[in-house]
Each structure stands twice: as C-alpha cells, then as structure tokens.
Length: 294
Ligand code: IPE
Ligand code: IPE
Ligand code: MG
Image (cartoon, rainbow, N blue to C red):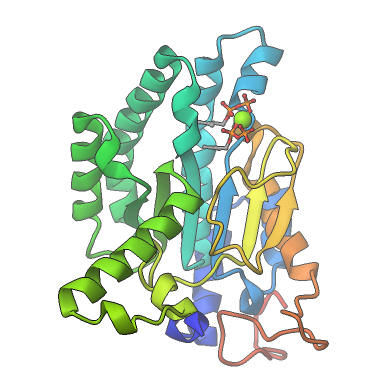
C-alpha cells in the first residue's frame, strides 16, 4: 500500500540518472562495467545499510577502534553520492544504535566528533547533489550541540528533491514502532476517539520516522554479521538481505554496485508465485532504447 506513495520514475529520468553515475566513473573500470550492467528500471527504491566492522578494521591494523570509525567516513560519502547519482529514492545509514550507548564514553564521544566533522564538511556536498538529509532515531536524547548541528543540516537541505538520506542516530527499530503507536494513541485521545481507535498497518507506517518513503528493498550489512541489530524492523519486512564480509571502512563503490547487481538477480515474489514488478518504474520494458545499458 505504501508503495503507491512513491512517484514512479519515467525511463528518461532513470536513464539520465544512470548517466550521472557513469559520467564520474573511469571508462572501462570495474565500477564502470558494474554500473553499466545494472538495469536502471529495477533499482531498489530504498537501500538500508548497517555499516559494521569499523572496530575490527582497526584491530587488524593494531589501531585504536576510533581509527576504524574515522576510516568509515569515506565510504559514507561514497555510498551517499553513488545512490544519489543512481537515482535511488532513499538511503538509510545506521550510524549509531540506541544500544551503542553501552560502549566506552570516549568511543561514543569520538562518534559525535566525527558526526560534527561529517556535517561540517558534507552539507555543501549534499546541496550540490540535491540530497535531502533526515535524522531518524531519538534525536532529542543526543548531546545538545550534536542535535543542533543535525537540525541545522536537516533544515538546510529540506528543499532538496533528490535522494533522501536518513541518518539513523540513537536509533532503535522497536522504539520507533513504540513511538508511532504512542503518537496514534495521543492523537486519538486529543480527538476524543480513543474508545473507537482501530490501528491498521497504514496508521503505524505513516507515523514512523520514514513515513512517506518506500519500504526498504535492499538491506546491506558489512562485516559478515547475520543479524539486524534493531534496524528498521518495520520497513525491512520484505527487504532483500545482502551480507558481505567486507568491513565498512573497506566498502568501496564496486562493493556497493555488486550488492545492487546481486539484488537485481533476486526473484522477489512477496508471497506470491510470480516475480513482482519493479518498485520504481511504471513501465518495465526499455528494450531497444538507443544507448541503453540494458
Ligand atoms: C560499526 O562498527 C560502527 C558503529 C556501530 C558505530 P563497529 O564499531 O561496530 O565495529 P565492530 O563490529 O566492533 O568491528
Ligand atoms: C549495529 O552495529 C549498529 C550500527 C552499525 C550503527 P553493532 O556493531 O552495534 O551491532 P551488534 O552489537 O554487533 O549487533
Ligand atoms: Mg559492530
């Protein structure tokens, strides 16, 4: 039902977005060939990434864990730019879970400093690429400075119309669902309709932090862990899962394009028996279009 809210892209839009990516890749490089092999009509509408393995990346180099977090900033920039240039609708990055407060205080503080660094450097890049930043998670519980900077970046990019970048910070999938249900109850109480309140899926989905965005089509987790760790529990109901042993700081553009290529090979049936139509486009057949990578 929520898919209906996504405005279908026309072939011309999608093809020109693919060109945006191809234009920055060296002709004949692995990334170029991988990008060309993608079917522009079957891109995931929403990609979620559990960016894991920074600590192990550092340990393998006998470096402190925070060095791994620092090395993880580059792949964030790459993933954001690549998704924007591909014309993907939404990208959700798991940056800090509600459970990550269990880590040593110095590590948590380094993560806030890196977020400060990222926002300071990247807002211009987000503007250039027409990317709209959203923060999802219990943002009100963040240190005041971090919260203020995040809100300013969200505000600055609010008018952009390209990729929606959701940064999941102090995020918990369960908490998000609980918050949505509490919002419903509050609204019904205020309207005097609590006695007759009936909750359906749409009522919950439209009160999640990702309301109005498509469900996740492709969920990537780096570092080989086969778990969800409380990420986007509602929105991944029918996501294709892709786990790679690559540690987040080593996750490069080729690795991301490989994940999307693997996604395109999946047979998605959504409980039916026929493969489902692509989420993003109205018209699935582009055969014979001149210059097409198909
Ligand atoms: C992911 O890397 C980053 C955050 C959770 C903030 P980790 O720090 O979890 O790295 P590993 O899993 O210990 O290797
Ligand atoms: C998940 O990674 C959270 C983020 C990537 C921000 P964790 O490293 O915290 O997850 P667990 O503890 O291995 O489940
Ligand atoms: Mg981890």
